[in-house]
Image (cartoon, one colour):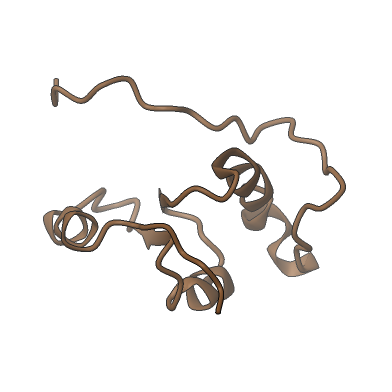
Length: 98
């Protein structure tokens, strides 16, 4: 309908923890369980995560990173124009630690 190409899908259901996965706090276990598969799929490439359940700590820790954009959406509102504009205005780019 939107004319977008096929986009990759990261399966998070049934994911089993693997060596090197980021640690997830007990209180974020449910919502943070998506984080490891997303990072593993990205393999260091820039990415955007648009979801209604993203742990606030992950959003805060990613604010200064250019290689990832975490957009939390309100499930009652869905993806809004200002969020699309934000993604188009400053998409994730390759980031190197100094």
